[in-house]
Image (cartoon, rainbow, N blue to C red; front, side, top):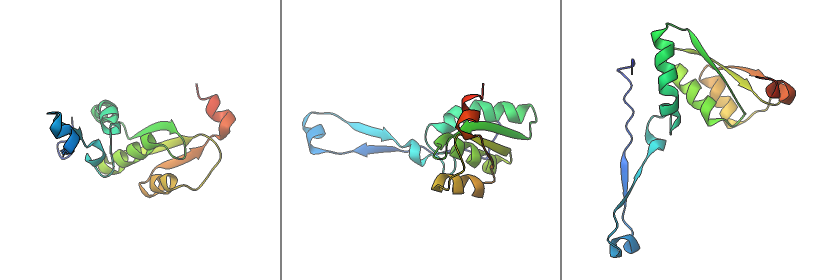
Length: 123
């Protein structure tokens, strides 16, 4: 990854439950929700090759599609804020105010609402 200052930490959380111990089972969860406060969950892994390619090619920004509650757009906006990429989000539907939309804006993502017809015609 061309971002040496980014090293998300994904801890293992051991679950100690009586019934598991009685069965001789050890269980741990990989806490992807704690990987990075801006680029959380599996989205960081999905975005990593695209971010690397954009960096290698010297691109200024990234664009993607999603909805008003999109974790993908949230992670992309977080990556843009973290690594200095301009990000544009194309959102399905009509403009609404959600916690995700507020976060996207606060992270610097430029938002464009496509309506439902426009979103269907995205290809």
